[in-house]
Length: 327
Image (cartoon, rainbow, N blue to C red; front, side):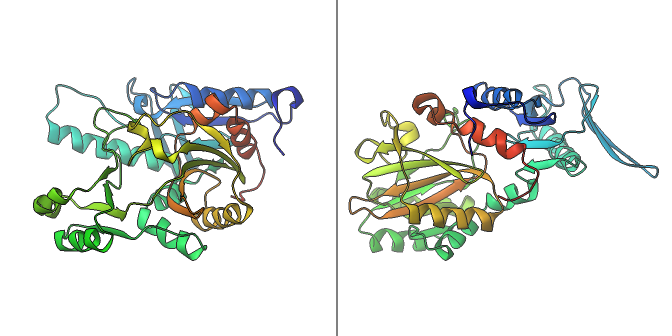
């Protein structure tokens, strides 16, 4: 059950740690607001700024189970929202190789600190990191009865050329992971169509593998914000989406209700991945078939709540305050 603002009563008195990013103002504050409505205390930490004041760390000793602190506070949250995990140390005067080494240590400290927190995670770090594996997603999605695109994740130019010919030149390419924080950051690499003249330049793949997939014809492109079993869905007109709706000026989102059989398959997939939240990208073809593209365990849904009024933040707040760990 989702409690809308005018129906909310104070249910609990818990501390919820919200792990976010300084460039993410809307979504985190919406979840914080919904938690306050339910009597909880939200504590926000921007993971990209954890190390700025030198007060983030952990301790372990023979006579204590372990402790994590940040900004002078010993962290003992009842729940943890793992929304943005982007621990970075900024040091412009440091050599690039040295900065990379320092940030590896920062990354290791961050994940090590999370392992000492005893509250309920949405979602557990190990689940999130495993679920970011796109080949695993596709394999499990297919096992759950969802159609997936014909896919190659490879550094082999010949494999890409064969895929291109097999689908009459209708192939797109993308990276597995973002180069930089932000859906439209300066270094974002959009999904793009592979052109025939690209085939002669594929030797560069040997230094950097990519994902190649058959291009699925679009009637609609869907983003499903999954939160505690609720599937809040927005749709874009497929004719305006191009290869990547984030960069094509795809127009306004409209509400969409998932077919019950598709929702059941998505629920099975999320259970297999051990996730209670995530954003799933789907395509509805002109013939009405639904095709699974990917799930981002911490994907962006702010535009769906802002433009469509979908109560996604409320769903996440209630998930964070549950007593059980069911996805």
